[in-house]
Amino acid sequence: MSDKYDVVVIGAGPAGYVAAIKAAQLGLSTACVEKWLDQKGGVRLGGTCLNTGCIPSKALLDSSHKFAEIRDHLAAHGISVKTPQIDVPAMIARKDRIVDQLTGGIASLFKHNGVTAISGTGKVIAGTKVEVTDGDGQVRVLEAGDIILAAGSVPVQIPPAPVDNEFIIDSTGALALSEVPARLGVIGAGVIGLELGSVWGRLGADVVVLEALDEFLPMMDQQIAKEAGKIFKKQGLDIRLGTRVTSAAVNEGKVEVVYSSADGEHTEHFDKLIVAVGRRPRSEELFSSDSGLTLDERGCIFVNDFCETEAPRVYAIGDVVRGPMLAHKGSEEGVMVAERIAGRQAQMNYDCIPSVIYTHPEIAAVGRTEQELKADGVEYKSGVFPFAASGRALAANDTDGLVKVLAHAETDRILGCHIVGPSAADLVQQVVIAMEFGASAEDLGMIVFGHPTLSEAVREAALAVDGHAIHIANRKRRK
Ligand code: FAD
Ligand code: AMP
Image 1 (tube, rainbow, N blue to C red):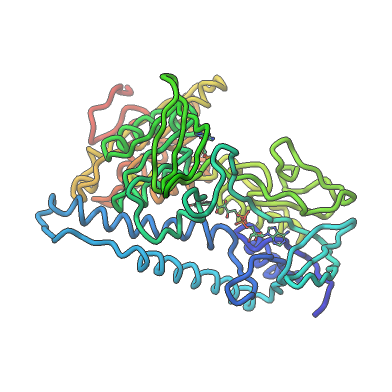
Image 2 (spheres, rainbow, N blue to C red; image 1 turned 45 degrees about the vertical axis):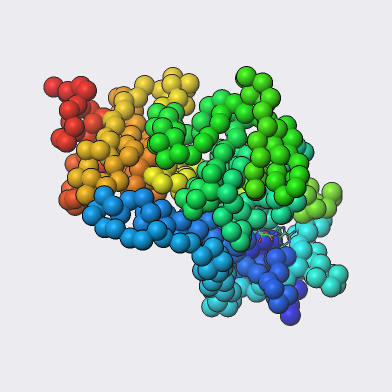
């Protein structure tokens, strides 16, 4: 096997594997170094996203959603069923098969595109060289024209609740439980805590989410966050804001959790406790001290807008660098970097990255929030359309939530879209496309949308920006 490549990528998650495929497609000889091993000791591709992140969590969210639909929502349609039962091992096995299929798919794509997968732990050493240590401790050095670091991230651990992988678990453990815990504690009401709390809550667990901050989803548009909070409360999800966990200890098969809130100290007992307090970049032991790379204050590899590090010809992308920890953000950075290495003028639009929380209803957003616009002194207009007024949502008996479109007060250019509601993830993508084309709210309002669709709610919210919505009483009317 040659030890010389045009491009060497470290990490085969959605950032690294996409960068590797793109580089190979552009005619560059490419190797991708990955340390994750499968059960047989072979290299496991796909990173967090495919193995323990986006895909397995969505598989379980879909299974548990079907279960909850049958149990709670079929009666409204006149359908009666006997009490549904959940076979947790079968549900987990289905999730594992999906993961295997997709990770195997990346291996096929590597083969098809001529990317060489190399099993081992990669480290950048001075110059553009990568030292690879395999599972047996054998070391080889790869010479690279350019290097792309895509080492991803790992769950944050907090001293009050050390993960034991049995009673106190992280997101990976929460994707592999063998039965529904009767009482489940979740530390952190962020994206991962809400999604995993939803999975087990829908299957019957009594879920309590403990969140240190007083504000729910502070990074989201606050109108949407408040609406989502109300919907989750109605669903019975017990989210306790302003509660900081100070200790968690396992006692006679239960986790005893102590937390403090404004009214003092409290104790709760759970069968399992999920620690979902965020992720941190996996930037340690990735480069030697003489490689020229530096970290920022959050431990991310320091890069500029083009993902160039401070070392020449070394790039870093995905969760290991600044920006939202989202699979598609890393993948797009991977495409940009591969193109730039191939001599093309590629760039990323960081203002147009959608983000989604896959609860039911989903929460999705792109662009600026109302509070950000206010803080920056940007003059804006807002249009809101509730799903309660959508014929399609009513037909589906799924009317919780709303669409909100924010546009510039003078130019009418769309600045953001925030949705809590059915299929919000897919709906927001329409606005991502509109924003990428520099559309105004009026442009979006002039497009023909099929009827009856949930998408009509997006158009109506765009029309509502200037008081022109058809299917709600407008708060204001333009002359
Ligand atoms: P990773 O996917 O973490 O991949 C990095 C890879 O590099 C790993 O395979 C690792 O083994 C390898 N590696 C690390 N160091 C070395 C080394 N020195 N040598 C060799 N290999 C190395 N994002 C979304 O966009 N949508 C979602 O719905 C979503 N859901 C999520 C649900 C959960 C439960 C979790 C945990 C995450 C979720 N995410 C989601 C986040 C998403 O998984 C990450 O943003 C994404 O995986 C980051 O991609 P990456 O390629 O940067 O890193
Ligand atoms: P995210 O980073 O979006 O996954 O969210 C993680 C959440 O966990 C943040 O909102 C933190 O405020 C919260 N968190 C961190 N430590 C604690 C703690 N000890 N008790 C309760 N919540 C916490």
